[in-house]
Length: 320
Ligand SMILES: [Mn+2]
Image (cartoon, rainbow, N blue to C red; front, top):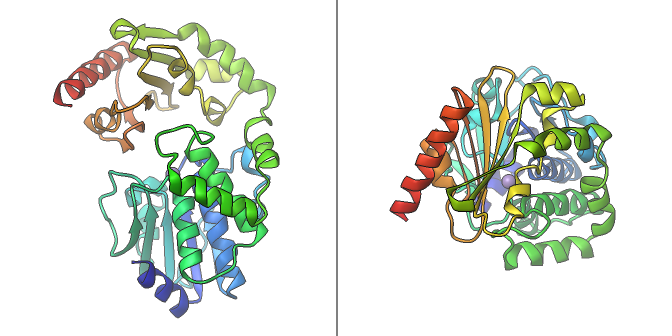
């Protein structure tokens, strides 16, 4: 499959690169590394994202050139859809992007349905960044310092700072190669994790009193409402990582963040320890992800959603 992707790169000249809405370090790092690679080959590449780049990723080289309005599509020969298990994860413009003649999907989600022919899907990979690295190496191309910074950020963030279950040999070996290629772990970590605006801590202060432990302390959760966001003067991206906090409590196996969306629905982020599968829980609500990290969007009253989630956790545990 790597061959088919490199053939497409060789044969074509003008590329669109995109990833899922609500950007994370893997989406952005993968897009930017691929963009650098294509441009180094003398190709034209444009990154389109529906959402703005979160502030803590603006240090990534090339992030200032990302566009948020889809340019006229006629010139594009190939669209790379990165870190998406489904085309519609791209957002509002997914249908239009789907009309570009050649689609290539590079992704590591277990729930990937295989929405296009040319794809590189490996649920064993830590991140899409790790797969981009594989592609670059397979093509015999150099990993520049810029690319190394982007790909290291992708792996660092998708493994939760090399802590989650996807922190396997491949992730660590790739990270080591990227450090050799010019990625600076300390500088990158400071930019990603230690560059928060005060609003993020104000939002955290509002979220912590919502801490709820259920199922005998096995399930821990936090809530971020639209009101809390407004009061803190915070953006939804500032709640990034809050889901990991209940999980830091001994005995908590499943950690959930209920984040209210502007339309009143709730975006659920689920994390788990060890063999506990939250992907199955998210799938009950039409979402997806990985065994230890998944998400979904649910409509309804929060208390009712909580009840349904606990029910899904029980069902999933009974099936396991
Ligand atoms: Mn990812």
